[in-house]
Length: 93
Ligand SMILES: [Zn+2]
Image (tube, rainbow, N blue to C red; front, side, top):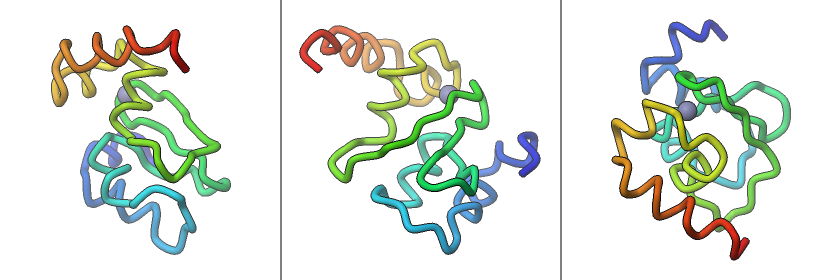
C-alpha cells in the first residue's frame, strides 16, 4: 500500500476487502485507518500510528485519540475537545 494513496477514503476501505476484522471496515477507513494485511493490524494514513488487537466494542476514533492524540487528521475531524475528553478518561482503562 502506498501511503500517499491512503489519503483517499475509498482507497483505505478497499484495503480491508477480504479481511476479517472485528470492527466495521467503513468505520475504520473513516477514522483514517487502512489494513496492513497482517491480521487486524491497521495504520493511520496521516500519523502512521498502528493499532491491532481490536475488540468488537471499540470505536476507531476513540482508539485513535487514545493512542495518537497528536494526529492532525484526527484533530481536524473530531476536534481538540474530543481528543482531550478521551485523554482524560485514560486512567480508568
Ligand atoms: Zn492518525
